[in-house]
Length: 345
Image (cartoon, rainbow, N blue to C red; front, side, top):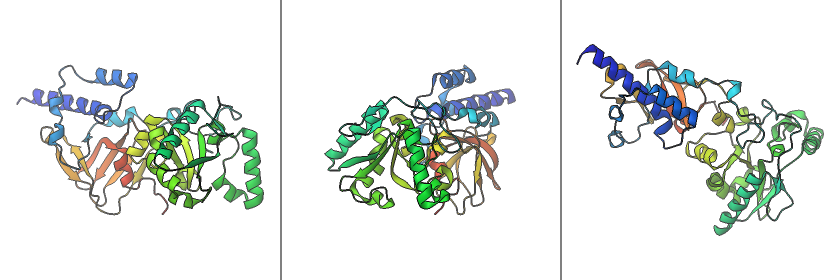
């Protein structure tokens, strides 16, 4: 094979691998993503340069890593990528990303058979979720939902008086930063009243059901165990945040621990595995275009997340003493299996 033909095949393969990042997992790419992928793909590119699904060894991660820094650069994290639109179910609200405007008031509807309110979408989703929970013999009740700026301020000030400011910040949002003010947060409890607003709620019938099923209706447990250093709040298994069914399903399926991770708000970071991982990844080097090999990440290997997630995949820089450096993509669930972000506990 001539040198020019080899270079052409390399270029085609890399372009196809870019497209795989948004198409391989069967999730819809946005119009801009689709147009960009089409523009980047050469007319002669063929899926034949990508291993067929049946050829991928069990446990292998796809798409494989690719030596192409441009892929990571396309999705570099910046504050502009963080969703700050208070009308969006994916808005990020926290002390670092306060609500804009501070006294924002959402559209609200009463949650069925309660005196609590939430956005119409969140209220409808909650009603559907409780109906299905009831079919499984699980009773659920609302303990809190929408709170105005002033209500949140009064609650926060009360906690400061009771517990001091340091602890108050771990259990209550500053006014103007609460998801309850967005109408997207609903605190739930077990119908028995057991373990209300306590960690033990996770072991009640409702807590167990919510953990396994809330994502089906567009909710996530917003402040999970062991991620206080990221969310700013202690574990709250009762605090459900509405993000919509698409995002909730991706977060659950890929085991993405927090909305900060999903939003790309943490920026680039590096994880250092402390043991040999059992996960396999495709590493595609120029010398193995026609025969990609599955390699295990070694002890001492590093993965740097280099940008925001796109449809459940993270751009990464892989560095290994044995295999060198390569840019590529990893599934979010694989990233979190390396305990990225150093959770407590």
